[in-house]
Length: 298
Picture: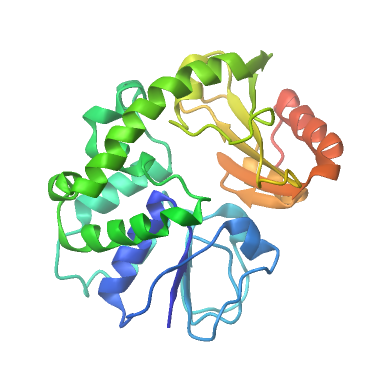
């Protein structure tokens, strides 16, 4: 039995809770949602999948993404909810020895992007927000760190976690990285009507930083689009789309829209990945839908 989840804050908390609730003694299998969607992940009989699309080989499945909903019997729980960790916490609520209520409350807030302007501009003053930004995903070289966070969050409160030398080093790095990221965003983002478009395809290595920062820098935008290469050989393009968390006037269901472009996600945020040869077709279509800003759920 393995825990299979994605490397973001919600995924890390999902893993921490599942280790406490189930008899799991093997390392987490960290995967990206797009790889699950395309059948590229070797799921084993008995695996527990969390915060990812369903696979019929798993024993248990927990998720909250709009585009991952299935309509057949399964073991586990699916709900449209702020976080997958919250669903797991509710499912196993009588099995936990420690009080994880604060951890779940903060995970719900972070994964649903329910943040204040001050939390976005000064994450260093908010422990959970800063910690979440140290989990950058995509880079398998960070697996040891993700696993360490899982272990720490199982045992300690946020203050003890932040005092861990390795965690502190990551947090300090994120604070410096965010300072540089603001200027990079400014130089590589353009505003077309109510859509902000950040294009990082000119970079050999995609810049990393505070994913919420763009909403504070372009208050006129109701939705943001980030375009980047997904791999070193530039054969795959990744597009991330998110409703502004401060100008909540985007009417497009992002996950539903991106499900038509080899991706998916929530109503308010999602991503897709595709071969570079499709970029000239897919990207203008995505932007056209967002510029029209019409309800696409009917």
